[in-house]
Length: 228
Ligand code: ADP
Ligand code: MG
Image (cartoon, rainbow, N blue to C red):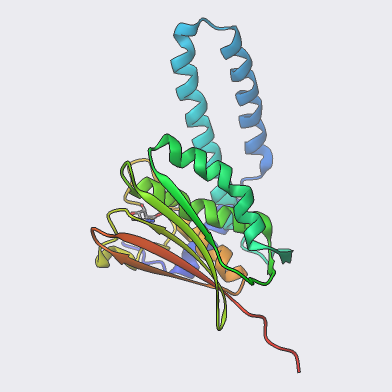
């Protein structure tokens, strides 16, 4: 028997499963991480390589749990008047460091006269990080990741472009499905989470990709309806 689940079923299934997981699981991981750090400091240098791997894998497990939980908490979010520019400025050092390690570059193009938007800053940070990580993971050395904001007639647009391999047309429909991944160590939760964050902000996400050239994810945050 093969069960076909549509997107909504999948998300509510994820939600029900995650309801059983609370911060109880994050606490022990935090404790283990703390003690590992202490042990690393007291251990001979010859073991440092192993500690590094263990800590990295622990962080990976942690981010899977975090993505999973945020996806499950598919509920209305608290929004406040937020400058997209401020959020991007805050993330830039982090992104820059990440790109640098990979031998890639980042360009940030901030549009002028962009109004503040009603956003949940934490979620929008997560959204931008997920899109940028995907872009970086898709690209080889010397790739260029571009982060852009611009005012369009219907709202504000946020674009994340990469010069990676692009996404073949037959994969594009699956991108936003939870657990869809083409990576050996992927979770397939990143874009599902992006989509649910964008939808909670009444936005729209779209992909434009050309194989061999690159990919652009665009998010449109529509202008609020005018009163009166
Ligand atoms: P993960 O990154 O864990 O694989 P995501 O939901 O973030 O999960 O992405 C799902 C899949 O979409 C990726 O495995 C990859 O095949 C594809 N993808 C996402 N972003 C890009 C991109 N910028 N370029 C090429 N492929 C991408
Ligand atoms: Mg991802």
